[in-house]
Length: 394
Image 1 (cartoon, one colour):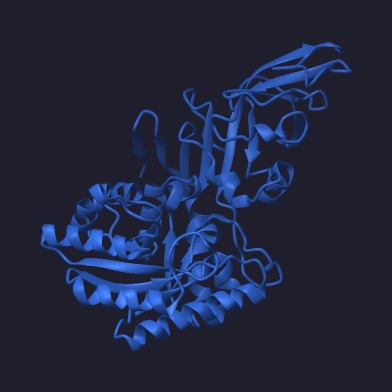
Image 2 (image 1 turned 180 degrees about the horizontal axis):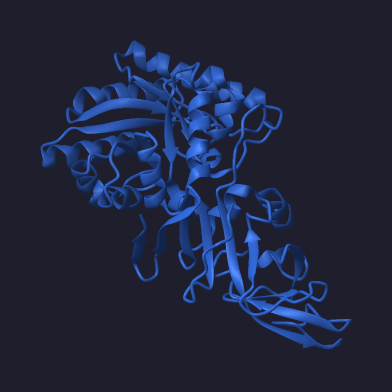
């Protein structure tokens, strides 16, 4: 990824590589070539921290015509900014927003007969027909109709009575605990499909696989795969031996605000967790947990890259700032760039330090950092969510 274009108003930012995003999307398409499954781009939670609108627009330009989000407000955001094609809300939609969803031609999810009834009522009042996917609980125990013949009968009875609903899809989600449990979940979804079919309910769109399922279970692609993490450079676990590339798509960066010499015996930051036992050079950075850098990485657990070398975090990470030890990095000055995540700090290293997963590390990045989108080696868009400003460059 090229060096960032830093403006004097840009103290903390995220460089986003749209070329890498599009390459990862094409990788997903290649992985479904044999099955013929549709690739749905999952852009929930602000596209895993990347900025949902700009990401969806880039994917749309690359040929993606199907998107998935978690909630109605995420769907509204995409439609308001001109994102076309299918948008599937995979979570439940609040009743007051159902009319908006119908007006915006958004596909809804139902996980109970009550949910189906609410959607049907809203569609009838709007004089519309709602497109709905049924979420089935196959053992993940998070959301969905229970996978029983009794539930299939309830769905069938509702389908006969609720005339403003078109049941287009049937889906579930893998727990990915072990292959045996995954097989049980897949078999349960197929059993539910069979029970519904015997009752005249035949949703044509059946889907189960996320990014991990995409590469691990090509025989289960069915009509579509829901690809999120892989789009953003989070290579599916257990796929290192497979011959495809999955490029990291962002670099979370900040600037050095101040550099000072601190004598042994002094305390760095809040509390007394970090008392220096040596004379040190300390750099203060313009980022903290309010920007998405985990407080868990305080006191030497985390590292940043400055001038191509690693500097450990010292003291507690603050909400808006953090301190790092640059004693062994000569020449650090205010205005220098520090890579916090991505770039010189691979996702995998960061997640090991933070004791979490790669999805969380990129998704928790807040709205405060400016997002700088690059394509073809050039800055194409700068998005400042706090000022609600977006600048596109040609």
